[in-house]
Amino acid sequence: ASADCPPEEMGAEDPLFILYTSGSTGQPKGVLHTTGGYLTYAAMTHELTFDYRDGEVFWCTADVGWVTGHSYILYGPLANGAVTLMFEGVPNYPDSSRFWQVCDKHNVSVFYTAPTAIRALMREGDGPVKATSRKSLRILGTVGEPINPEAWLWYYDVVGDGRCPIVDTWWQTETGGHLITPLPGATDLKPGSATKPFFGVRPALVDNEGALLEGATSGNLVILDSWPGQMRTVYGDHQRFIDTYFSTYEGMYFTGDGAIRDEDGYFWITGRVDDVINVSGHRMGTAEVESALVAHEKVAEAAVVGYPHDIKGQGIYAYVTLNLGEEPSDDLNAELVRWVRSEIGPIATPDLIQWAPGLPKTRSGKIMRRILRKIAEDDFGNLGDTSTLAEPAVVDDLIQNRRNRRD
Image (cartoon, rainbow, N blue to C red):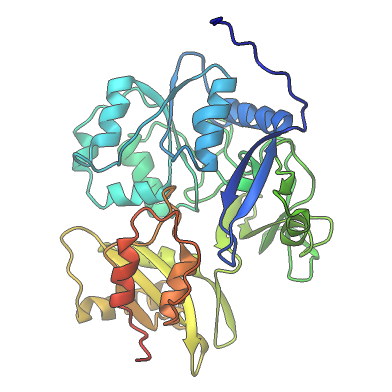
């Protein structure tokens, strides 16, 4: 057989791959990306967002089966002829220096990971980071969910020694590549902000009726025009594609996320709009309460959901993972309640706090809030698709120790 394997010529709109992403109902959607547009966008965002330079080692820690692994382990870097590092393992084995040891061993220049991993390593303290050099690092990146300012600053100051710009990238499985992101050296950074749109991307904020909002404000995040990496359909169900993304606000791609735009035009992603709690008539994003909780010195991670409350309509249910060495107690519960009240106000008072050894996450590090809502509602008979969970045993523990029992 010949050693020569000529590539097959494909049309720009020929399907390239299908990735399944979770739906709000628990039924995954087959996101279909096409050859020309997706490859163009993955390559361009990889080169410009990360200021990639020939010969550098680029390391994206994502699961290769997730869109971040597709776009920024394989397609983007390889289309650019980049050196891409693939890692099979976890950040805390055999110890919590693992990521930084790999960076030193392979002279990694650009490092791209999820806020979940950063918070988990931050929980272990500065020691495991300081035990390594990390002198090869030039750019740091985050992906998957909004990063809280405390974790951003730790990543910048401790991991990057205050010298590596952080590209806090916002995008989705459906978008193929970055839509809102800083560009290293060109964008002034703000801890926790995805900053400005990528070239040609037109984000906007709308109210619940779809009216465009101007200036510094908060609203529902939409995209007004197309871009090369946009998904083309939901595989086998084009009507679901239209209904999910284009029917909420006519003529606009609805991301499903809420955002704040500040006076400088920077975007701050506040999380999924279905992650909004209505407490006594006050609408509040769960991300705001979570950010307040993780700002407490004893808290490593937190997830907040709503649950039915006889008086308030919805109550605030918080799952809290403590830093190593901290022990749960009634006193700490009361301390955290007081802390959140002082950080945000009485309306944000957590009604129930459940100590969690861990949170249910996909292998890509995203918290499965749908499962947390079901447990908080004491309705865990149908948790939907849990096949992508990294540690299924975490769910059993949370169910066993739930605070809102009706039995």
